[in-house]
Length: 165
Image 1 (cartoon, rainbow, N blue to C red):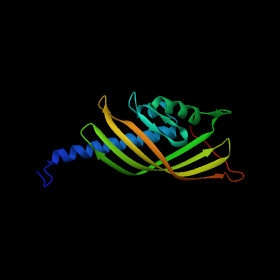
Image 2 (tube, one colour):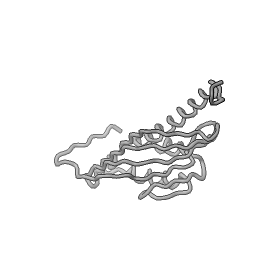
Image 3 (spheres, rainbow, N blue to C red):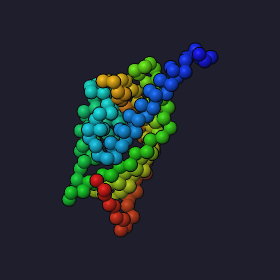
Image 4 (cartoon, rainbow, N blue to C red):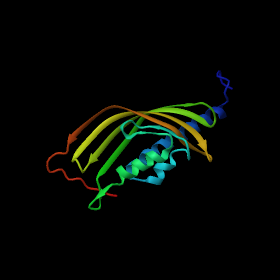
């Protein structure tokens, strides 16, 4: 036992829970960038997630956000995606509340190319999440975002954007 009264096994189990939550969040952002609707949806609990996404809306279930994701991320013109995103999540701060519940905060460095407007958006976003175990896996039960700042600028004249999807 340690001074905190927790055994090595308990502390290791906590670190494994935190690692699993981090992996969940990284899979979510990877799904965003890869336009993977199933992976995106699978990051949330089946029903009742609290979602507050600023200008993208507030939802009491992930289905509404998934619908927006499909409309924006999967939009194509002439067979090409017109919105290209890059999510880089940093500064995880995860607190375990129990063996099956946790909360976390993250910072997102975001970059987006919009081929309709020919613009690039750079931004910083803060996430305030809650996590629960559902069917033996960590899922997001709350995902509230707050945009810290963003800048939108035109793509340079003659810029060529290629896609590998």
